[in-house]
Length: 370
Image (cartoon, rainbow, N blue to C red; front, side):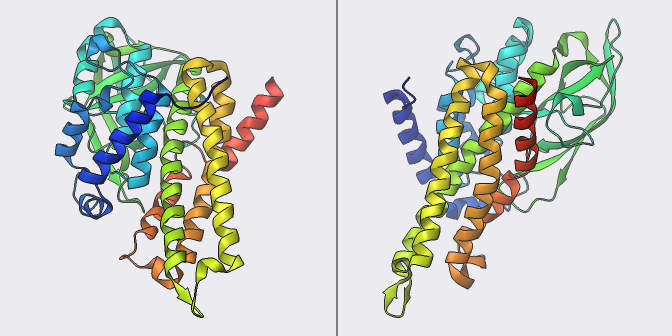
């Protein structure tokens, strides 16, 4: 079995790298992350024109019709640049509609998502942040003309920027997804403070929000968990790119920084830590690639594969971020040096969609049930 990237995927990676280097270098990222929106709408429209926003959307809805492995190629490069945008949340929303929505729902929403006219996100979790279908507590009673929803969704990626929310709720323990637009009566969002300003998270509040039957998707726990697994895989892909960037800039610093008339990279204490960082990245890279392959090719293996990748990456990237700052010495903690931005990204990525403890426990439970 060949898990190497195709020539087309390599070309896609080159295209993404060139675009981000030109349009969103770290100097530009530093400017964007301090804006109210936290992303550049002009750049957002450019990536829409390149087809990235519709990568996993069927061609008949203005998408490209590619798979999840192609998506992680883009996400890795975005992670290297700390690219600030709602791309993960938007891609998960598009992927969910592409898989689960009715033909009418796809026609009404996917074109706008793929073309960048609408920004989408998923709003699944409630009070408990455990990323599984059992944690959904928002409830509603479906009537002939739809459902009225009251409640609050937490940990919503890019809540303040989204135009379309895919909201999970239950009616008599049966899970549903509701398609809710920002401009509906009773819909409001509230941003949450985060250490990493390149990532925006918030809450979605629903106050007597009326959702018509045509905007409801009846689903099951398996589909909800699959969506959360795809989210974990997507976040892990960005973690790989960011971790690689830390290794690259720390290695270069170790070559340039002189101590006792020698580059600090000459000393074993530095070389060993850099080697350990490299081994960790390559280890969770392999786990990620297999999990991404499972999304489309082996769905029954996805839960375990996604948890293995996210669990390893959550601990490893956090340590890599810390080591990168420490190997830069005291200046690594200063705002002027970019490495501290990657440490902040590692702190954001560690808990979202499940930390290492959650996923290792889940792996154990999956093995027991098997």
